Image (cartoon, rainbow, N blue to C red; front, side):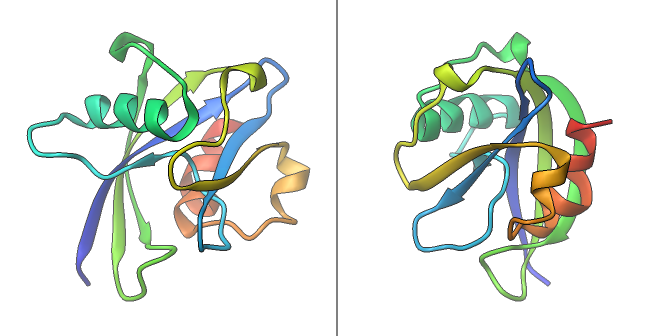
Length: 131
């Protein structure tokens, strides 16, 4: 199975909610993030993607490494996603839908079960948000 390497953010707010996003033309919600450009570190990729997708500007030292996680890709059948994940805190007023995003939601653990989630989010990242 071909691998897709990405950086992903587990963003939580002061109320303990987690941020998930849905890209244009897709149905599953996932953590914000994306694929690296040549020469970028995982943290640099994430900082750039957060700015592009959400208008959220973060410094690299705000990103707390969580590890590398592997799941089936949500939008590329037959592929695996290999995500280097980071945690950070933000608030609802700091983010807006931009770039290729169709929607964003701040969710609680109870609300997560009602959403179509990407495997990576469901299996690995959202449990970390609420642990």
